[in-house]
Image (tube, rainbow, N blue to C red; front, side, top):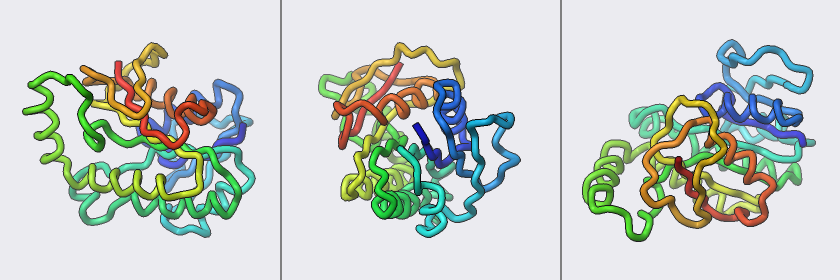
Length: 216
């Protein structure tokens, strides 16, 4: 499969690129600065520099002829999300370009607090953790919510992956998954497992047009 990966230099994006190559896919890694991609040259890796991922014409050039798209884009801070939203505007350009190019499978990483709490979640999480996170990172989550709305309105075969707190740990492949819901009691997950979920959902019809909760 030919996969274009946006946000390829981020923690999750790097893992998506690495795992996709290991699985035998051809990867186009979309970056602003190629020097930030810590993956050695590979015969199935193409690095494409796109300075503005909201530029639909520039995005069209890197999704045309591909089989699927993965987005690991997201604001690094509340300030960035407030002053220069990333996920929402970028996915608007990406989904439009995909529609024009006839590319349908799309997965994107969001965040657990963007969606509703799982049924039966503990009182500590319901009363303290989620309200605190939503207040502290409200602009980041607003940008991700805009992204999800854009994807849902598009003609793509989209899946949103909503992880809790991310950790730099090796991939386990044994994470829990909840289609159309969040994982009860899920508080952390390795970035590598999120990358695994993004790739798996590209070809899993059960996750099409759904948000999928993941957690260790």
